[in-house]
Structure formats: C-alpha cells, structure tokens
Length: 374
Length: 259
Image (cartoon, rainbow over all chains, first blue to last red; front, side, top):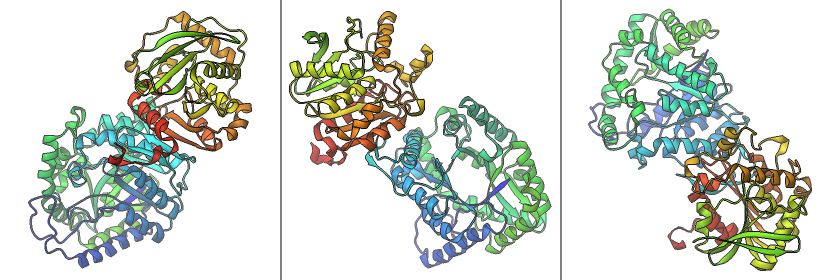
C-alpha cells in the first residue's frame, strides 16, 4: 500500500463560531499564519521520512477551513524540499480555474520535482463556485472539458488551438512539458456513477472520501472497476484511493480523545460557515444531478457529524487508535475496498502539532512496517 | 442560402458542382462520403460564394477513368476553379477533401489564399486511424452526435460508389510521402482542424502538417468525432469564419473592438 500525508492546512485558532461564508478576517493575524505555513510545510516535508509515499495538498477558498487557496504554491515549496515522495495535489478545482494555467503550473511542479507529481483534477465543493463566480451547474461540463484540454496541453508538442464549450484558446504551447510520459498520473473523485464514468474514461486514479459505510464504498469501487472494464482496462489497487481522517496515539483511548476534540472544531468551526453557502448553491443551481444527489458530499458529511468516534471507526469512515488498532483498520480497508492508496489527514481541525508529530512517529515505527506490504 | 447544382465541361470531362451564396469565393472539397451540405457550409454562404465540386463517381455522378489519383482530382479542381471561380480563392477541405486541397495548394500556390484542412486524410502514420469496415463502428467513428445530421441520407448504392471511387483515388496510400515532402512549399496560410474524439484521423496527422507547413495553425474542436461539421457546427463555423476573415491574426482576442 501507499500512503498520502494529506494536509488541509486548517486555521486552528478561530475562537468564535463563524456564522457566514465567506468568513471575515477581522482580528486574524497574518504573522500567525506565516508561522502555521512553516509548521505545516515542515510536517509535509518530514512526512517522506516517516513512511509516507506521497505528500498531499488541496484547494479551498475564503475560510479558516484551509489556508491553501493555491496548493500549487505549496507544491512548489515541496518540490524543492522533498526528495522522494510523490507530490499529490488533491487537487486543483478545475472548473474554477484557467485550465491552461493549471497545465502550466502542474507541468512546472512535475519538472521541478523530477517527475513526482500526482495531478488531482477535482470539481470542489459547492460553495467554492461563489468564490470564483462560476455557475455551479457548469461544474461537470467544465471539469470534463478542462481535463481533456490539460492533457492535450501536456502531450501535444506542436502548438494548437482549442475550440470548446467553455474554453477557447487559439494558441497553446506550454513550456515546459511534464517529465512523466505520456503525462503525470491523474486523480479524480468517483464517488457516484456519473463521475466514475468519466474517471474510468480518463484512466485516472479514482478517489473516494467521507465513507458512510464500507458496503456503500465497496459498491462505488466495484462500479468504477466495471466501468473501467468497459473502457478496456482493469484497475489495480494502485488506481483506488480512499480518503480518511486519522489519529494514531499510544493508546486507543488517547487517540479517540484527540480525534473527538479535533472533530468538534472541524465540524463546529471549520465546516459551519460553509453550510449556508452550500445550501444556497444546492437550492438554486443544478450542481448535483438527480443521479448523484442521494450520495452527495453534504449528506455524507452530515451523517458523519452525527456519529461518535467509535461509530465512525466501525463504519470505516475514519482510522483512529493505537498502532495495533490502526494496522487492523488499514488492513480491513485494504481487504474490503481493494484500495492500494490511502489519503490520510493527520492534522484534523485543531489537532495539536505535538499529537500530529507523535502520530507520524508511531506511523513510521509501528504502522508502516506492518502495512506497507499489504 | 440555398445551393444550386450545376455542371461544367472541363478538358478531362464533365464536373458537377454545388454553388451558393455571395462574397469572397471559397472552394469546398468534400470527404470520402461525398458532399454533405452541412449547417456550417450553408451558413458560410452568408458572406462567401461557396463552390463545392463533386468528384466524378461520387454522389451518383458519372465516373471518370482519367482520374487515377488524388493529385489528378486536384488538377481537375484547379481547372474548374480557373474556369468558374477565379484566379484566387480560399479552400476548405474535409478529410479526403483536405488531402485534395493540399495537392491543390502545392501545385497551384498562387490560387489558394486561406487553406482550411478539416480532419485531413492522407497522413495515417503507423497505420493508425482509418475507417472501420463494420458499418456500425464506421458510423460511430464518423459521428459523436449522429442526431445532429440534417442532410438526407444517401442510398446504399451511392455510398458504395463513393467508397469505390475513394479507394481508387487513394490507391491504398496511408501516408502520401510525395505530398509530405512538398508541405514546406505550401504558401497558403493554413488552419488544420481536428476533432478531440476523432479516431479516423489521429492527432499525429495534424501535428505533422503543423510542423511542416510554414504558416500554419491547428485547432482541436472539443467533443467532435471525424465529422466536425456535424458534431460541432457552431464551433466549426466560428473557426472557419474567423480564420477566413483574419488569417493567422485570428488568434488575437479583439474583445468588444471586433464589432
């Protein structure tokens, strides 16, 4: 198995309950955030020496939920400071961005890192569409077109133009091209049938997160595999990534205590302001089609919010406990979901840095040696 | 604007052609399936006089044994243009028609002003691409959106004759090496168009042409198979009209000034 040290870069000190999104920065000290950037980047750089195969970052806007409006900037720093880990950007929110710019920045990161980029192409969560003033109902068609355009930009040596539905670029020839040929591995979300279809077509890594129960996740994986076969290929565990929050401590009790506290901040402070903006998007646009409305991100998140840490562990939604317990939980995910990639968020909410660091040590010394060969 | 079907007598025999519209002349050279008066072609007549000669043997016309190669057909088009169209004109080709158009531009550089090569045949490197033999697979290779076809279907007999005529002229050539060697001499400003879903003409063909034609650009039409004019008529028309009007300068976004 391979493991991604995934970081949301949350702002951990918000002492009020934010009531609206975008969230005000009144009384927020950017000097403190400079310290956080250093702390977080250090954790990510160190991760490759703690048994993690990838280091991962992602994109969010306008709130303390995540301080990476542009994860490519963080990836640029990681490209220089890491030596062996893949740099997984999970991912750029393609429908919000200029796809040519994404192609260029991703290619630069791949070249700077010596060919270590994992290129995440994501649709994002609904409220992000307000941030960049993009119609949410265009999210899927923009994602599809941008994905195909970026691949062309990476793989076509001769200059070309693009005449599409959302994008018209009469002259494209990005410099440099990625080192990885034909192009860096692509990672996309495939938590429902419609998205699985496109991910299979693009032969991308399928990602699922916020698992409500392991049976439903298994169905999603099986559907993806079946769809991939219809496109003439057979996914391996290396094509299936499962996202989980994780807390590893010396004892089960200690880990559960830390996770419960961090999740309280995660749900009550970091996620709270987004809910009303998300409801606005969901109520007044066709962000979700009928096919995927039943299993959408918000519903899964709400389900998890109402569960105890123990219930989440049992459902396969999170990984939490002593090293021995964590090894069992990872083994179960590997066996049940046939996944070879785990996207692990260790810095959950306001989890203290010391707990994160202890979890990394335990992962290196007592978890990775047991599960790397799974 | 409607097209009329006319005929003209040339030194090598009779030639039928469709003509419609008014304005700067454009010669449209059809694909191996024969003439399809597609929506962009019809729309083009708003600002151009469009001439669409029918290669003898296609679309129920009488065959011409004097035509043995694509180059022969291009020579007949040149004579047609000289007699009917005028000394200088723009050319749009579709697949086999783009192959013909390239020969025309290579042999008669002073005739061709703007050259648009839609999904150009004649450059199947490594044997990639081509039309499948199975009729269903062939149809899928041609159209991503067959429901957008607006022209009357051709009879099986006409389609079969079209296929035979094409095979005779193509002579089994996958890569026209002689033409390829002449690409650097093409003087026409050229736009190469490809469909992102096209499996008949691989992207390498467009790259090869772009690499060797001195003043050339190429563009992918998103979500179009081989029949770009049918699958994405608006996008195709936008590129045609913009390039015919502005040549290589079409890459500049002029914003509201353009109006």
